[in-house]
Structure formats: structure tokens, C-alpha cells
Length: 465
Image: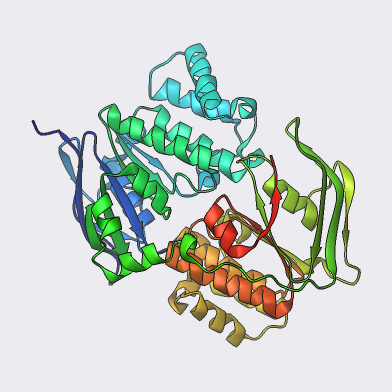
């Protein structure tokens, strides 16, 4: 007995002017099925999800057909699919902090779904919202705003809201980004529950562990086209296309181990640092010393205070107790941060070229230095004319790295700096970062939930609980 087809995408293309960003993508998803989308950063994976939803910018033109529950619509007619949002089809976007309303507390945002989509009365919707938040470890965050959440907490909140309406078709864009292994597995289980309840899922990820756990089918995108597709286990075990093979070979578990470096002078010292946030103590009596040449990895569960510690270290937040001492004679710009959410670190209405030129001018770096670094990061010049929201998260993450390095800082706090990158781009970016750290003799504090990546960066650890 055949299962009913819930989502069908036929010959979907997206272009800007005469340039195709996505070309000829087709797939179907029946009840109980899953599709994992892999590919290089900027290949068009997020664009595909937005095109299916009917949420493309007016500057982009879509062609082809999208059918939901057997009802076909032209891909270009996004307005016809919008009444289905949250009811028949739901999207977890790549940037959860942009998906959440910064002016409303978390529980009311979720209870709104219960009232408007599920038809619950106000009291029942409020109770349902609190139960759902508790199920993802966010009971204490119910009355917080999105800007008070860690990246991982915001990810869980956005996922919970996306699933709350009971849509049978769920598109999830990097749903495990910023999550530790426990919550990564929890998120995978939540997506699989959609399948088991008669729905279907299409999941964009750079994490091959997630792809393997989801099973089903996989499609690999490169430069806007599907270059390989099929059964997930078969494709990931016996890849046929050279790019798929490169993705598998690029996993951090296969990278060489780091070589111990000589330590230079002290850059910063944290003594007995204590910090509370939202009425909860994140860490207490924390000590750390950072010297030139150090590479220190910070790990710990989502929401434990890793980003907060970095902000205290950089002077962006005050410590509640203890003190941070920075080496004398260093300018404030000698302490730099690579943000977990790169969109937040760029002016939204300024071109990327202008952002880079402004930084190069300020730090007296030549434009040739910028272009050489962009080439090493595999970023084409054509991206620079765009605004931050007009490129992929992975591309923006690499541009953020190029910009930070212009400061030739004494310390870089890198907060999940490659979480939006495919395995190949991630290895390139980490290589550029570590080479620059060695060249300028800086200290690096590196946050990651990926044990394999942590092992490839450094043997020095700071574990938070």
C-alpha cells in the first residue's frame, strides 16, 4: 500500500537576473519519509527551503512547481502557500534568534501558536506552552526574551515553536546547530516523531552524524544543483560524486592532531570569576590564564555559560565577582570575538565589501590582505556587493573570520565559529584561523560542542557544567 505524498517539488529553480542560484531540484516526500540535504555552504540549501515555503525576497525569481498535500502551485506563487504556514507546513529557519520576537517573552510566543493554529483557549494554550518548554529544558526561560537565551537555548525554543502547530510537513534548517550531543539527539528524536505520526521531514544539516541518525534519503547540493542523491546509508558509505567523498573526508575525526605550541607572554587572566544570569549562577570561582600562542577549547552543555564567560573575558559583560586582568598596553580592539550568530555582528544595510574596507582602513591593512584571505576561505568576490542577509550563514561566518583577523588581535574568542559550515569549508576556515593565530602569536579561546573538532583544535580544555 503506497503512502500519500505530502510534499512534491518539481524542477524548482531560483535565479537573480540571469544567474541561477538553484537549478532543477526535484523530490517527493510521502508520509513517514525523510530527506536530508547536505552540501557546501552557499549551495542553495536554505534558499530551497525558503522557495518551498514561498518566502523568497522579491529580487529572486522562482520557477517550477510545489505541491502540498496534492495541491500544486507554481513555485513563484509564494502567496498561495502562506496560509498553510504553521498548519500544513512549518519551517525552522537557520537563524533562530531572528525567528524569535525580541520584544515578547518566550512562553507567550509559544502559546500564541496554541491559540491561533491549534484552537486552544488562552488558559490551555499557556499550559501547553509551559509543558512544551519544560520538555526541552526551558522551563526556567519561559518568561525570558530571546536575547537573554544562549544560542543553543534559542535553537531549542525556535524548534519547539516550529513543531507546536502540528504541521505534517516540517522543513528544518540546521536544527542541531549550537546544541550539545544530548540535545542534538533529542532534536533528532523530535523530528523522527513527526515521521512516526504520519508526517514528513526535510532537514538541512552539515552534521553527518545527524544525517546518519535520520536515515531515509539524502540529496547532496553543490553550486545550486543536486549532484548525488539516494538512500542515506548507501550514499554515505559508498559515495559516487567527488564532492560527496570530499565531505566525508573532511570530517574533523580524520584531521591530524594538534602539535603543542610554545606559550608566550600572558594576554589575559581570569581570577575567581562568578557570573549569574536570569537568576541562575552560570559559573562560580572560575580561573583561567591565556598566553600568546594558547589554543584553549571551552565545552559544556547548552546554556551553561560558555558565551557569557567569553563576554566577561573580553570586557563585554562585568563579572559579578572576581576579576579579569588584561595585559597592559593592549588596545580594546586587541580582544576580538567571532560571534555564534554572524548576522548580529554586521550592519544589515551596509554591503559586505564596505564592512571589510572599513575594517581594513581602521586597522591599516591593505585590500590585498583581504582578498588573499577571502581566496583562502573560498569566497568569490561577487559576494562582496551583497548585504549580510543576502548570503548564506556559512558564507557570512567566513567573512566574519576574515574581518576579525584584520585587527591582528592578541586574543580571539571564537564562539562556535564554524557551526554553519560544511566539512570541507570548515577545515579550510579552521586552517586559516589557526595559521593566523600562529602568525600573530595570539591566544585563541574556541567554543564547540563537537568533540572531534575540539580534539583537532587543541588539547587544552576548559569544561563548564
